[in-house]
Length: 145
Image (cartoon, rainbow, N blue to C red; front, side, top):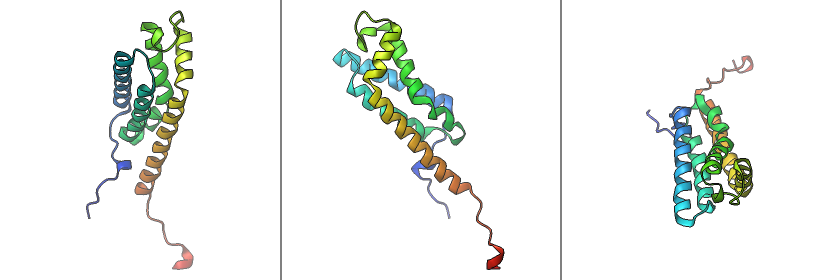
């Protein structure tokens, strides 16, 4: 009998590709929102959470660790690039790079926490489902023989 794979079993992408895609999508969200509103706000937060969940669903099981540490590193990378190029988008105009990164992280901590928690939750469910699928059938005990 050929069973369809569930959502939890479908991730097959290498960790590096998922990280690159996540960074590209996060930067795209920043550019779109910055072009529309002139700052980084709720649209980026929603996109960030969706990127974290999507990355956890797409990565192959051997690269779970890579995606497990991705959300905070992704947000720091995006805000560092913004702090270098346009610190006024995430902080005050006169702030330096480090202060802009800290301000950005402070303003978007809710999205970071939610994205990280959902990402780890998805990875935990996937690990459990994949572990159950590959676990050998229990052997009968001597008492039942």
